Length: 264
Image 1 (cartoon, rainbow, N blue to C red):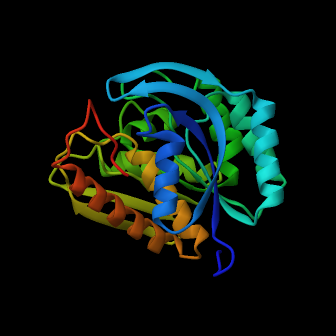
Image 2: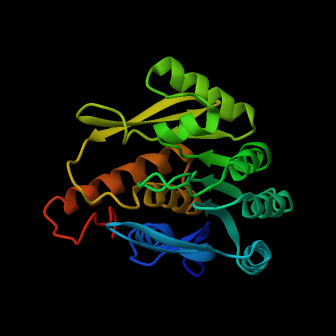
Image 3: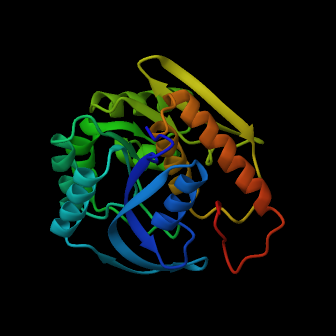
C-alpha cells in the first residue's frame, strides 16, 4: 500500500506491444491512472499493430527470473499482474518465484491467443499455468473463450457451464475468478466475480467501438493497482470496470489507424 512518500508499486509481467495498444504499455497507462507505479518484467517483444500480430520474440526465462527477483527484492511490492507469459518455462519461473514470496497477490490475465487466433501460450504453458501457477494466484480474469480453453470445455455459453468451469479453476487453488463479459450477448456488459464469498456481478452498458485493443490488459492492471492501493477485491473490480467503461466511451468518436487501444 502506498503512502504520501512511497507510491503503491505493481510489478507487471507481460509482453511489449510495439504499437502501444496492449501489453505492458496498456498495463502502465492503467496503473498510472489509478495513482500507482508500474515496474515491468518483459516476457516478449511483439510486433503488432491495429492490423494484427506480425512477430514475437520471447525473453530468456532466466532473464525474466532475474528481473522479477530484483524488483521484488528492491521495492515494497504487494501485487503482481501477469499477462502474456508465452511458454511453460516462463510460467514456471513465475510460479517458482512466487513460491518464495507467499505474501504477493497475483492478478493473472490469461493471455492465450491473439485476436487473429494465433496461440500466445502453448499447451505445455497452459498445463503449467493450471497445475503450477494457479495455486499462487489471487485473481484470474478470463473471458468466456479463455475460460473454455483453460477448462477443456467446448464452449462456455450457459450459466451452468460458467459455474462448472469456474469450479475447475477454483479447485486448482486460485482464490477468485473474474469472468469478463465482453463476449456475452446483449446491451449490458456483465462481469462475474466468483470467490469463497459467492458471486458478485458488475455491469455497465455495452459500448459500441472498434477501439478495444488491450481491454483485458487494462482491466487486470486497474484491478491490480486498486489492490496495491489498499482497496478490497470487490471495490477494486468495480472501480476498474467503471474506469475502463469511461475510457471505452471516450473512444467512440476517435479516429485511429486500424483497431485502436481501449485505454489511454
